[in-house]
Image: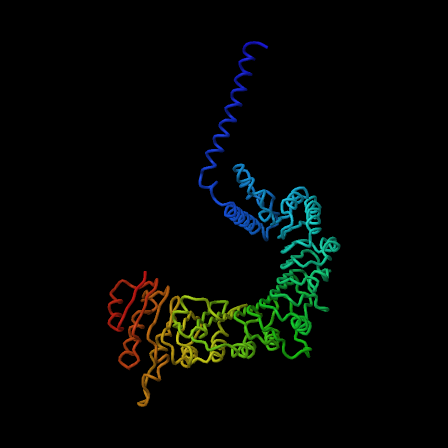
Length: 534
């Protein structure tokens, strides 16, 4: 060995020695840093939240896409195990951190199952229809399904033929399964679901979501302990009869959320097998479909007893016949406690009613309407609301006992003056009205009636006890070319009510647009208090 080679060897040895020394010094340095003094339990929680956030965002990005989530995206969070030895030791010693399995390859799945030890699993599998990815993911999924007894949440997206291939792995009953979701692609015929998945063999199953080309309820395959049921058909085939649906729902008294999309048949059964189905805990009901008709919706609702319902969403076609829904909806609304605050919103394609009850008698209804979520929500959509909104809202508001309403929020379109008078006149005790968006030009005319009879007074005004008008995101810009002067119309209305003995005491502008020509000063003279929020 020459002198040069010997010197290089000595230098390499010395470099290695100093490298080890520097690593040791860095380890000692890191050991006194705040992150290393953090309790291990807290560090694990940070890792878990980071892992769940990364995984869920990766799945959301690819949901509905033709491409599949790649493993490096789904498991990008594992980089925390490569920051330092301490973090890696903490990560590897936490089975819960690895318990959310996004199915990729058999090799990685085997390693994850080892790291999870015996904790409960949450499994997400999206099996494509092309090779070799289909074969690889099916193999990895089978490895996980062998651990069926410790799967708590199972979400599968696959082809109908792949579901048949997995029947052997899916027949095992388990006490741990709480959530089961299937998104089935491909088949135009009935999907051969495994009965054991949905029946009482899973005593803890609470959420069941099935989206498939066609779902049949000839023999209701559903667990009686379900609290959340989502069923969606992706084709417009015959569907489920109302009788079959009622028979199935009778066996699920624990339901709290029910969503049916493109599931019910278009025609109504001549003689449903039951009179009324009681769902005492149901809070959310969503019915929709490309061919879901108001006739079917009305029949379905009229056979339900829903004492705890708080949210009803209906998307029906044609919406022109939505008046058929009024009677069953009014029957449901009569079950509620007294309604003290009401929000009515109509746009081009939606009718939205929100209501607040007097469950907190000590709280001001107007405050509750602004600060808390509603107790009842009804949404009707499915087409142009122009011809049906006025009649629907007037009929529904009658079911709310309008004399009990003291706070009202409106965002209305397509109302004539007569229709608006019919809607508002019964609400004699409203003290606060919130107007969202540019108010209808007819609204001040409705609030400023022409009193001609000598025996008529302030109590004969629409909303005679109105104290405050709150305009939110409204525009009062004049348009002379169309002879529209909204601020002047409102000034005339407020002056008339003040002179006639039914004054509005307060007006609030919240994020509104007003002409810069002194109109606000004029308005301040028409009321006792004017408040402006930018």
